[in-house]
Image (cartoon, rainbow, N blue to C red; front, top):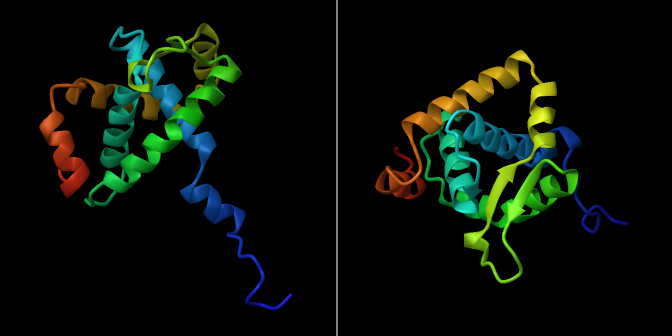
Length: 156
């Protein structure tokens, strides 16, 4: 096989840095955990999960670039992540076969809460605290125009 025909592969370290599904799964589960513990909100829609995930990414990253491409990529991937979390027994999806995707609500299960509690470390505690602050400061629905500005202009 010549050099031109050989398929290219990224090193595992770079792949994990930019496409780490396990880290994304932990982030979504942490958002659901904080929603239940701090906000007393048992269920979140997929749109609410994406909102908090996007704001969390913006607040923890160092750039001020528009997030529309990341948001759209995450919107495509969230279904796969929720299915994975449900198969693990960490979340429950409320809806039936006739429910549209934007009508589904997701809640963390007792197993999901136990998993987060068992993984307690300094870094996870800091992350959960950061999520709690973001949920208090940027509650879903109150900052829709600012969120649109974040997506398209990179400013919140």
